[in-house]
Amino acid sequence: MNQNKAIIAGAAAILVLVLGVLAYLFLGSSGDTGGGDTALERELAVAGPLGDMAKGNPDAPVTVIEYASLTCSHCANFAVNTLPHLVENYVETGQVYYILREFPYDPIATAGFMLARCAGSDRYFGFADTLFERQAQWAFTQTPIEDLKAIARQGGFSEERFDQCMKDEAIFNHVKEVATRARDKFGVNSTPTFFVNGEKVEGALPWNEFEPIIKKALAARGK
Image (cartoon, rainbow, N blue to C red; front, side, top):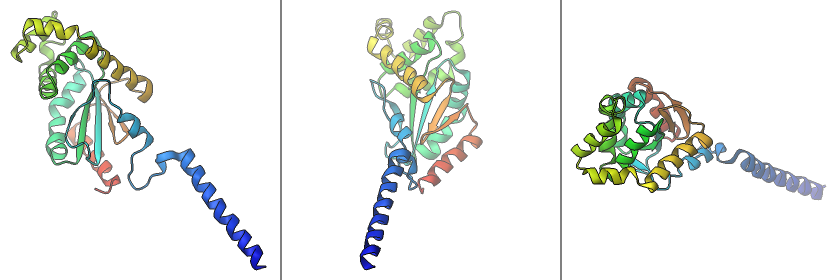
């Protein structure tokens, strides 16, 4: 009798182990209830060939990835009216890591992103912010490249350096690859599109609607 009980107990233990392994294999990291990264988050963490342009602490509990186009008026609205609140309240306090990724709608937006990249990592966001703030002065004019060149000149670019930037294949290929991967792998088809710890959020939400999403993500990580 005791031997039978031992056999049954051993079989039960093996069954529990097998079920646990199967749960891990089929559910993957989505079964992490302790706030660990999901498989999607790990995929999203993969940067383009030239790396990400980001603000904040990479080890922050919440990562916000924005896919944007510099010729998108909704993206400009977010950049001007919502992003400053996110940076002040959550990025600068170490709670959010913010990444801006290129998803240009057209060649003009691509040129704008290339210019920001050519400015260097220290000046990237300065140029991106300026291009969003002054979008109407270059993105929708009759001479967008000339007007973009004028903004570049104000930022210290010579005409020769600007022309070289527009011909930089490495930067062009980076922008193209980031946008293609976003569309094909993550289903991005409009801008702005955000991923907040892997949760997809579409549209330029005002701060009073965007902040609750950040708070929810922080709460899920126990913060």
